[in-house]
Image (cartoon, rainbow over the protein chains, first blue to last red):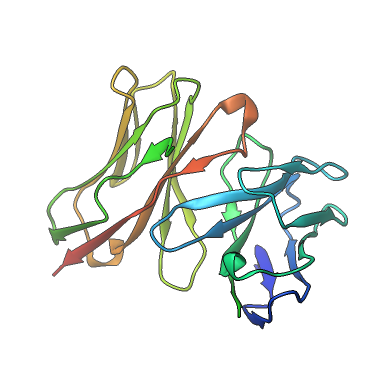
Length: 112
Length: 113
């Protein structure tokens, strides 16, 4: 009964380093999302994938890339991390774009 | 330019009483609205949704009201329970662009025994 699984849960990066956040869902959902949450702000959409093979920019895509590896997996890559990317990152999935999303537990990323 | 606003960062309510959480939006294209609940160190969980063809949707103790003319929605929890203590986010977007939801900043609800 895993739902949406994100790895890692915590990560500290130095400015300029790269890393990939992994996300997998076992609900056979078509759509997947990456959000970031900053203190005092709501969740902001970084990228989403309506279905396998498609990806689109959200509200705050700069500095990120995504890959929809297959129906289950959607990864988020930071090519050159910046302190402004310090945040909590949430992956989510939904059956379609118009249904409620199920979220993972989040990845707390600190860039120093 | 915050298109979805939750103006109360926190709310404290006595157990058994009603909790009312408010949310305002500015974009008249928004016609799909959701509430999520979030406990510390967990991801948000879906609570209830409403589309613009309705003005009310109920699910057990939770009711969402939508006032389209005022661009305002509210979540009522009756009766409130200590386990309801969490951060509540409203989210809104155009249904035909589902997934591109805009979230409010959240309201932290504390239900005291």
